[in-house]
Length: 322
Image (cartoon, rainbow, N blue to C red):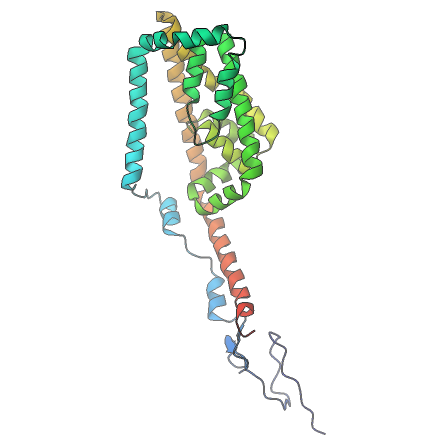
């Protein structure tokens, strides 16, 4: 009695058609790299040209290639204008404060006197520092200088420390619980942010502390710490140890009020030391980012490969005839 065999299951290994199969296969077993079944759908397997392509890690993007080879991408006109505008504002503020500090102190005297004699006066700069801790707001230094002008040096620094810590804590938990997904998305799309996030994760407490002493704005750094998974104890320890950085604008305000040669000399010394520390800290962070570039870029390439492979696997099941 003759025997009829069923066709091979969809996607199953190809049978040995040299045997006595009486049922004609639905596709050519000699060319299975990309086979069209009798229902019009397409069978993908390990020999398809697409799969062979996906087995290779995708090439770096132009921005990744430039980063690996130290090629700086040209800034757009808008970026150039923004850069010089910020620089001009900073220089103008420094010049005005240096030349007109006596007039500034006299103009602020009614406000500073009211704050000093009001019991709830310290709560006002604390509240301002908390609000200004959320990016893209700025102006911490102005509030800190105002504290130095209004209160004695120990009182002013204590008020500033309270405002800074409370603001950083609020910033940390807000972004940790509401913006982590957005941070993950930004890490996948922005190479500079991805490098900083990688360095923070790998470096732990030391990197967190150095970043807080660097020229990177503290409130932006706090956002990064919160969304990349830095624990709160590590964050708060680094925040407390970096509080001396907040002493500089407080002392500048205090020196403006005192207006003595000794306080002015101390102000200049403290300012120079702070600038040197921030530059050295930023240079160290940049160096860590440079070291991390190959690993981070390779991980991004593998992630793109995984996404393409997943799309390739899902393609047959998305066919309208399947």
